[in-house]
Length: 498
Image 1: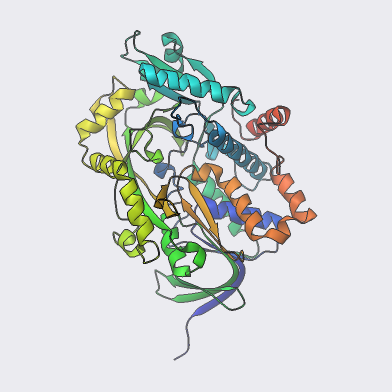
Image 2: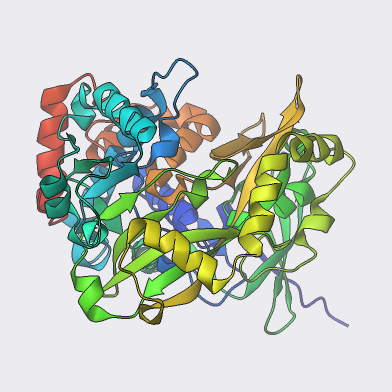
């Protein structure tokens, strides 16, 4: 009987058709047009998991409003470093997206990005003090210079009328306002990028294909076994470089690759739900992304926010997310994902991380047990006049937080994104969640500098990088004039009203 296995050779294999793979694929094709790329996705469409518009907040995480990027220290001060770094990364994304639009590689920016002000909102004397301290720590930096702060009732009413409805003017309230915030439909952007990639020579995109095995060969290349989930046919892909950008599915694939760099890594899945407004009159009253403070023990992805969204041309209003626990690593995953991910090399880090995060476990149990009444009570802290009949519960995306070895603690739970690459640069894996999609361009540039070390130093690649990202190799917070110029340029190209 003849061997029906399909075999293929490429320079790069991208696993997972989300924003990360799309970004990496497009950048590599720009840097080296003759590069041969294969993309494998187990679902039947691109961006159906974490990149989908309903599965993430679409905030364009730029640290303008997310209080978890500026935690309060014991002495009451606020360190702006992480927020500045994230804001810098988002400026890189804006430059890259502008390049794609100008070069007609993706359609009109109206499809994926809109201007929506970003706000932080708190109540209570202590929180108002914290927000003022945060504002002062951020606003003195050029990248946050447009930020405004107010405790004035009428000003707050002007910024967020729906949130202020039904409030007394003697309440202790404060908010910051960033007029240059955005709402991003990462699902639409991802699909546009794959549509562009698919038309290029040397790019093959396979949906309904699930990666089963990864093995590194003696010559450092990789052999990947893939199953066509519709026909059951086996494919063997041979490649020089593998990127695993499969969201929650990345950890099991990293374990299958059996590389020493993956030892000790585990994952903790957190699911989410939104309350979605169904009343057009209420939706029309709100035009902002308003972020509050997280509950004690809550993961960063659960910072409550009341969000204006624009999805497929329709304005929407979401509140949440409400966190939950599921043993699935993907929205379309298996309940066995978590138990099957526990191996001898990550058991201790996972147990240690669990022990050190008992408040998180308690928080998730409380969230899972919430009734519709509890969820409405949480919403009314932000919208005092909210009516149950105007809101419906929607399932959001699934996130897997990174657990890794730690010499002191045994294991720690990380809430950011983490890129792991093999020492020989032939494989890179992206683990983790927020700020994720918003900083995908900066993350992929960092990955390229780690795994394509010789090429990135060539004048040709450097010149192309600067064409795509004019600020490449520079930071903008210490160059106010360049920042101003690039923000003006990207706002014009992306049709943003700021």
